[in-house]
Length: 359
Image 1 (cartoon, rainbow, N blue to C red):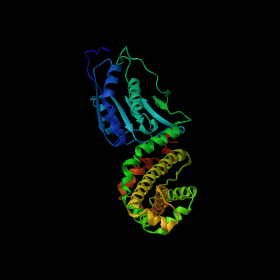
Image 2: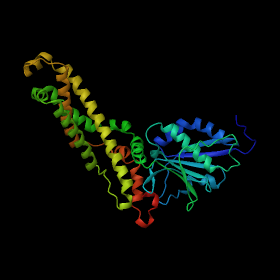
Image 3: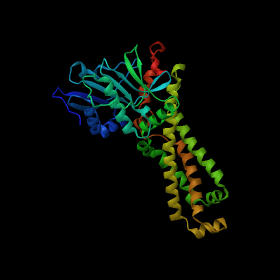
Image 4: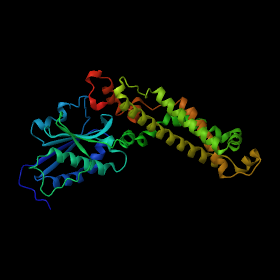
């Protein structure tokens, strides 16, 4: 077991963006304290706080983000940002500045699986590279996780994502950061419109006959078209599709556009599934099987109720698309633009000021 010298306490200050980064940090804080204490020769304390981080295109940080360093109150500062960062068209997982004793970790580039354990290892790895050799315990062994590259011109160390899987993993990380499962229920206005329209399928026997006549393949095509129509409407009506002002930013903007589309797709599929369940249960309660059999001139079963719900849900989603929208502007920004709002600061900079790392 590591013996801690009777030395001044080393304070590691971790600042995380509000939302998912802060919740991840809170979940691993105790483990982080233990891992860093094993790493450090000195007594160590982890301080954490949630704060909106502002990282400019030149990667300079606002003074308040590292003000405690200049005052000597903390020894190391590690920033967890929700902004995906790029260098030479490759996702930048982390960047460490040993001279400034500051490291930046981009949470979306971690991906969408085992994020807490990965984040824990990355933070410990960053701290190891910010510490002096006198501060590192002799018993600690660098596990070599991730590939760090030196940038002599910036006197920094960087960890880049795998060129083959990094982009896809970052898209999934951005989608996870958008948290569609939290904001999908806020499409209540669209759900109300869709439910009102879909309810016609329960009461109008012409829809029963149509759903019975349509093949499974046709019903599937109709449902896909209905979902796509709502996604497109949300994109167009809320102006959520970005166009890069400069060609060098196309990769970054493409990432945001893909994550926006996928986030909206998840929300609309959730809406469609909820609507199908509502209509299916309503049909079982309202429609008498013998009456339906007399209308269709055939024996009916559970498949008939499922087909009615399927077609009616598609009709409802199409109608919901025309009247769809988020309950307020804040919800709309949270679901797709929580990170993209600040990313626009990159695209609005004059081209001569845009750092290579955003290309």
